Image 1 (cartoon, one colour):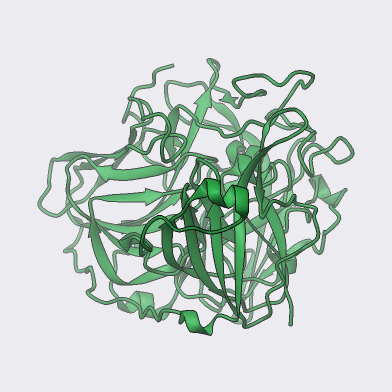
Image 2: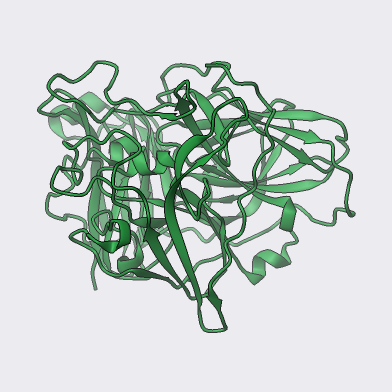
Length: 510
């Protein structure tokens, strides 16, 4: 199916208004429902799931240190919109088919409000998971200014719930960020980039089986999912009319599996000002930006003196990344910018020379080193199953960092794909990546490096909550565990991997 490009305007998610706000706390209620929405004007309206009747959900804007309470309410149907595989952990026939639990990705939050995958609940809270804690979540927002996002995290069906539309932005601001005089208001635009496929009637397509069907199973989890159309903020190939001035764009890869290598066809620089964890020390001018699933990057694009020009945001990342199939005419296009609006006011915003100190964590301060493998095996149906440290989700917890303790994790990738590894609760810093002898490690469990340590890329030199662990490399990250104790998870953010079984719980203890 071929859809025309740049015939629909980019939607900007609205700002969610609280039900109550005073100097002590802010309270929201957020409903999850099924509804129809136009994702492209040449398609019939598509049935999707979303928060507050919108896909993507409304943007939640809060202040650093603001105490926020959110009641997440499941009003979804009892039957799933997409095919559920009941052989996947947490999605067996003894649990409801539709379950939800919301995780604010990148938030430092007490564990009861983190969206633990088994803390799911059904419509009207009629049924709850084994780790259900409470109906109203508390977010203290003890974080710097940062671009976060919220999405579903229910065990075994995260890939389906997010693909159906359960995702939105959660933005923190602070006084320091405002003093920098960055583009703001209508010139500060979040962009969630996703890929989807459609049936001829406009409905979402998600496969029931891998390319090679699994015998004796009507529905099977697939090893990865790549849609053949690119959407931004819920529209396929949209355009955005801009003024000839600077804009801030908060880029988020919200796809299940697809990586994006973003460029502008004009060849001009984009100025990256933030990573997953907030503002960088200095802006950097880049011609391309690499985003694995769940990674974010805030960019400033300067359209000054470009009146009447159009430019296209493109993608050329192969699938699977990094050595898979190249993009085609459908997946190489993200969106278009049209510099056609008159300048409303003089642009006084700046790209500051210095933004935020970035004190590096000293390796010598680490009191624990962990060696953790990323491994592919075969299950009883001869399907690929991805494991962390060669352990399944329900194996006993083996990562028990102490509150305030600094650790170094060696992520030893024994697979052919790059995996975006995400830790809940904390931000970390990337130390380096290094090539090693994969086969020797598989045989003898001995690390034999075959090249020098490679420092993190310029775009990664800031606080991170998601890191690309590349094939044939060991990726080292350094982490200090705080602010809370309790039960959290770390996992691959390729959602098909996370759902089967590339996710592990960890416990922060005193």
